[in-house]
Length: 510
Image (cartoon, rainbow, N blue to C red; front, side, top):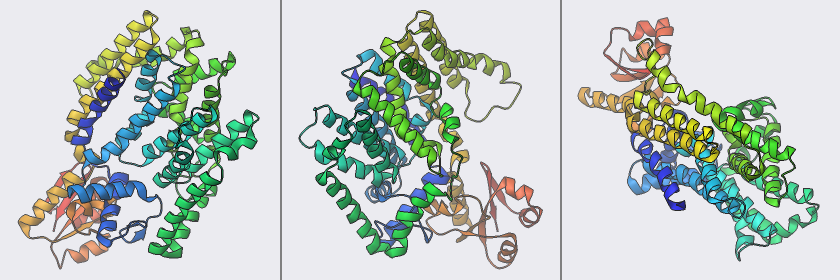
């Protein structure tokens, strides 16, 4: 049963990685950065079109580079495995962790609910390094807990600092912050704070600092003092104290966590709250999970720079702590917390039938996907009336996974809205037919990264430059249609020329 449930979840996501395009704002940028690193022979320092990119550590970019080197192209399916498999690996570690305390029924429901929780499932299907960091943080915390409870293996004392380093090497300082602060706080709560250096002693600090020193030394050798300073201070201290990107108020996560854990957020927090009220914080594992959640939430809330996804490492602990509380809780209210999202989704198909002929629905919403979602919600409600909360949650989770599967099979029809591949391929075809060599874009976000598809640099132009270029060379212009229609001068320069509409953008031939 254990392997089967992981395999079924895994298979639901594969078509998405086969059929969808890379999103421009992050995924395509990573591909362009990796191409530039391969072209210039850089492995520890990275640039995006000549601009230093010290935002992220190397591990994920190495994976992107490896895929290009092995396959000769950037393959979504290959890169997708480094998000999906870490997500399943994280849940496998959590399941193994709670196995002594929860039966198979509860563990299966915990997995299904977490794998369909908003931002967790979102992180499992986007090409980013966040899920890798989450996996290494969970492994580090689990390794520490095994040591604390006397169940450590022979190599766990070495693996603990290695996991912490890999978390840092995946995403940055959160990878060291979460494990060390959680471990120290838990030990202090248990009145064993002096034991912290038993788990993080000379050997562990030596391994962690040694690996960091080797990394920073390689960065210095490749990029010099300016790049190293950017990596160590500008991208860490400055982001934490006075962020230049994603600056948000201290209460930001109190707002975002509600949709980040949808549709199960009411269940998670109700179970934890009821468990605390009933003084069910009676085992070390529950206490440790609560410490991880609260210390990480507080620390990340204090930091100036905030994004919804930064909370990802605490999501598995929220979900599994709720289930650790569940066996000893009255389930009447908890059934309501599952019934609310189920009831809303049960109305999805009737609502679809009522409005399908009256308004233009967003592309990608099909009757089959809505029917799958609504049907599973009705099954979920049936099990709730039978007072079978885990079967109810599983039914709704399965419906959400089936919806993802069906949506994945039709996502290729939306790629013009998702990414730039279709637009770039159309432009290449036009360029070959007309003997055009140059590409320009009227500035829009991430346009420069279309070089991944075009296999050559693409330059920005303003209206004045565009008017001058049109008089002396043949070229292809990419422009966001909304911007073109808003800018009267741009409209005059582009109207009447051969053009093609692709998604939100337009290809204009000069």
